[in-house]
Length: 257
Image (cartoon, rainbow, N blue to C red):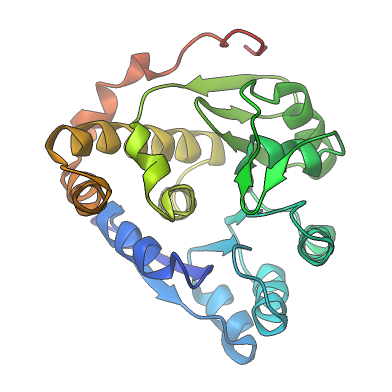
């Protein structure tokens, strides 16, 4: 990716836009960030991938997302805050009814709700759920044709028939804003040149490995945030290949293959 420099068009939360742009650069992508409806379709058509994040939805951004999704390819859709409000829920449903992304991402609560099951979302965070929602993920994958990523204590990737589980990382990720959004951007870089399962898996491993290394030299959330970008930028192919054991068996209460 660092040689190819894929163009990643991102429509995201104004809270995390800068962090996501920096993460895209660290992973080897070239970011373009715009919430302008008048140029959304054109940018999406020219980009190698599209990242949609509903963290701070408004009328203009939603129109840009709708136009971009119809014109884009290799779409990573991050359903931030789904279920938090009636407006946000309806907006996400509208976007997903028009186009099926390559990857649909959300926390445990958001994914349960997207699948039509009971779930808990507080603001843009998951509630107290600790069990990965694997049956809900499989159901959602079957309905949408997308690969489903549920983020939490253990990240999970699932299609209709199987699930992969990714442990590790750092508790400091929960102390910074935009950490989950950053994962969507890493997926956006890698999905531009590879199949969704491999790209999404590699992105999760990248972020969790970089977080572990950043924690070792961080003094708190602020220095951790900077160190996380440094570690992402310094990761090598050999680092990723050494993480084959990052995949684990289903945690207690989960199921998968």
